[in-house]
Image (cartoon, rainbow, N blue to C red; front, side, top):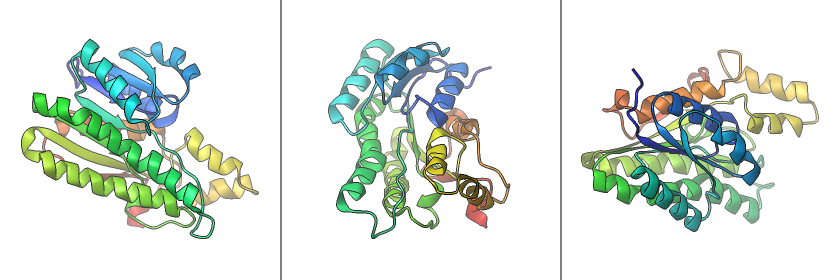
Length: 250
């Protein structure tokens, strides 16, 4: 039997990587998926995924965009039952290389964007007295890394925000958790490799950080998000779950 019975799951960043894998998994497990993408030209392919009820362009930093997509989901699908805040960006830089513009961008997309998503769905979830929020944080939210000050700060904020939401609404039928991936074999990771002077060294260095000696797969992160969103995790809230091939225990 599928894990879900027609629940509406809004998933961001479905154009590739973890979001695309999640759209497929949630749809296959019985959700009616609202799949959002960054670019208009990604919508056509998303429409073909079984279970996708709506595919829309969404700027996660725009409160108006969030209100529009969530409003449409409420009108056509009865409201958002599950939010998977997956969209985000990585830009490298230590303190000296991270100017105010880069700092603001990292927090705006990776932290404020998720806050706006959570805030846009909370009233509907409270009205139903049920809902599950799954945010994407990062291994960098729970342990240190070099050259990622803005990204790490934003993802640490996601983990702290998730705990606060979980506590605020634990007795109102709403759960909130976050996933903390290690390095996952996605276009985002490939971009970091492509900009390196020595691409082979960049890849081997990424792999070496993980005791399992490989990068993770998008599906391996999406499956944990699926679990956290489902009733299988009905007694789990406020948690930051590493999906990192053992990196957080090294």
